[in-house]
Amino acid sequence: MTAVCVGRRLAGTGARVVLLDGAKKVGVKILVAGGGRCNVTHHAVDAQQYAGGSRNTIGKVLRRFDVAQTVAFFAGLGVELKCEETGKLFPVSDRAQTVLDALLGEVRRCGVELVHPWRVGAVEASPDGGFVVGRAGTDEAFDAARVVLATGGMALPKSGSDGGGYPLARRLGHTLTERCIPALVPLVTGERSRWLTGLSGISARVSVEVRSGQGKRLARFENDLLCTHFGLSGPAVMDASRWLTEARGRDPGASLHVGWLIGESFGSVDEALRGLGATRVLTWVRERLADRLARSLCTAHGVDPMQPGAQLTKDARRALAHALVEMPVEITRDRGFAHAEATAGGVLLPEIDPGTMRSRRCEGLWLVGEILDVDGRIGGFNFQWAWSTGAIAGASIVADLESEESLRGESRADCAGSCPHAKKYPPGDSNPEPAD
Image (cartoon, rainbow, N blue to C red; front, side):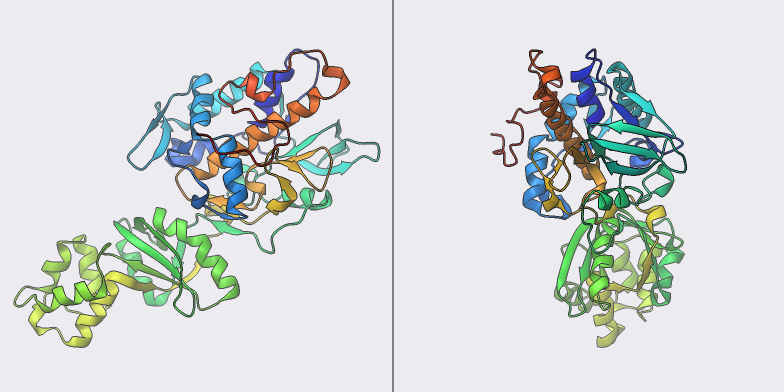
């Protein structure tokens, strides 16, 4: 995104824009996103859908290049997007390759040099300004007046984002969060909740809560849960995963709870079970949940599913009621970065100007995307962060270049001019007003 915004402005000027990618195959994260369809963004994006750094700062970035501008940008590349019931926006082709091909096509059209696989091993600031960008394991290097770090985090390392950008950022004066952990990652159940693995393939609309060791709610999500051969997955669980891992880093007693009956309370379910009379417990539960899930829930909590409700003991009834609305699930670990869709943690946001994505620690450096301490919910939010930060950085670099003698007198178009869907703000304005 950054390369396109800069390349559009510099095409034909003789300036050189080089895009270095260390992965064997470019754009793997795009190709695997959304089950191979690539959920480009979400129809309703705001700072509340993100965690990590300051939501106020995140909001400033998202307003500067928003969903409407993203949709228009891709339409300009020939990629029309459609909004599904979930709020996710996919290409009408339902093929992630469509998105990748459009981006790479525009990179070529703008004259940007894409070099891969070329893994950056070092970025050193030169005493006289600019940088030397060295290739890992070799003596090859580029001299660069400006550098953008768009290396991703640590999620899905086979795509190339294996944390290699973090030491580069540190070397250039930046600070990272104390921990970088997997986000949007499936969870592995422990022995007490192992019965859930026998339900592999069953999904349900649920609420998932992360609670502290003292029972305080830290996060709550309503969405689909999927039982798997190792434990739990699905959007609700993956959204909650980073909150659980983060909480356990400081509170080992933090726990995960699943509510199988959204909108019900312990009191309402307990009352319903009390009034079953001769109706079997399974009959009532099965009206609300899949048969296999209903049977297993009852059995796992000491209730014979074929037993008439009138014969339930008080303890059994209460145990089942609690399980249906706030069942604790023993989680031993997450499945790690190899199965994660995002990284929680990264370069601290206060070290970046949100109006330009320019480093406040190193002259001539910009940082964009997942290398920063920002992670969004499942559903296209992390892609939107990539498009927004990339476009803003591109506009900033163009404005920076236009201030140099070599480009004076030429068209004053910036990235917003080259990309007509971008909003225009004065260069370096780090606090734009929200759009009307």
